[in-house]
Image 1 (cartoon, one colour):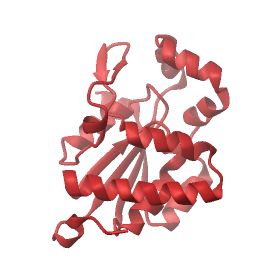
Image 2 (spheres, helix red, strand yellow):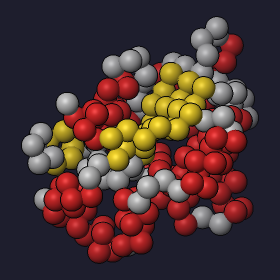
Image 3 (spheres, one colour):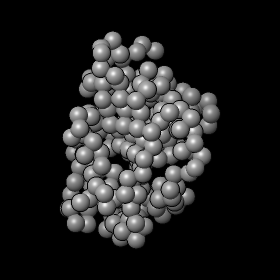
Image 4 (cartoon, one colour):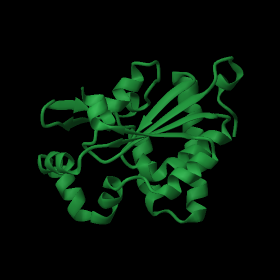
Length: 195
């Protein structure tokens, strides 16, 4: 795989990965990161998708539809398919770096379960500045938000185990694996970004 053209520039490559339960503040956190100069491929691949907030009304989800598609496959993939998908992730990241520049932010709720795969893909391109941010919001507020969304209610009924994983804290094992790869991980409370 060819490294992105941006590797040849002086700017270091950076990737921020944002994950967390639906309605836990991932979109708001992603928007905040974008104001710091990070470019979001989701605004290209999915520029009009809106979420329904309780107090905010409609808002841009900021989710990258391509990342979302791969993440859904990764959650159920076996080892051979996972390795193939990670190579595809690296190719996609290289394309986005060439198109958008050396600082990217990717957001999808399922990043909470797939961050390790994205990290390996990024490292294969020479992206060593990686940050994994996970949002945390009071479960009562999350459940109240979900109750206002027919889509999320349907998804929860369709696959309750995946939804439980999205709501549960990131496991110690995932933190340990990311730390071994020198990925900075942070839990961001909803109250910190909503005010």
